[in-house]
Length: 141
Image (cartoon, rainbow, N blue to C red):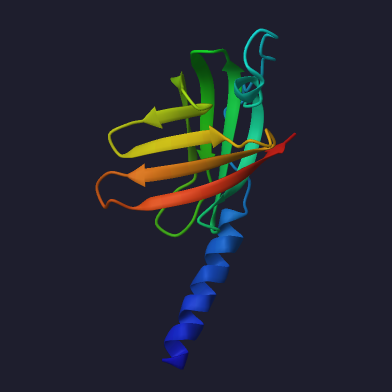
């Protein structure tokens, strides 16, 4: 049992180390400031947000453009055992409650602006294994 525990600790440390590598982004990232006429809780999404999915996988949300109904986003994730780092870019709908969502055949990604307007809570729901990951993101430059 002690050997097994040591092995799990080693894997966790390795996963955190590998995940801390830089997150991939496209070369042409461009953030456009939102117009003054959209609600502040939606406008607050504009920019880059970073955190750790389930405390072990780096994640980033970039909101390049946002208005009351649509947002151009980039979702980026780090590398960890079994997952290659990567990113996706999409135009998504802005949902009621200051939420943006992206869904494909594998995952549903949901990001909600918190009341402090300085943090974003995210959830990934994996469809096949029915797994769930959470993240709390803070704004980065």
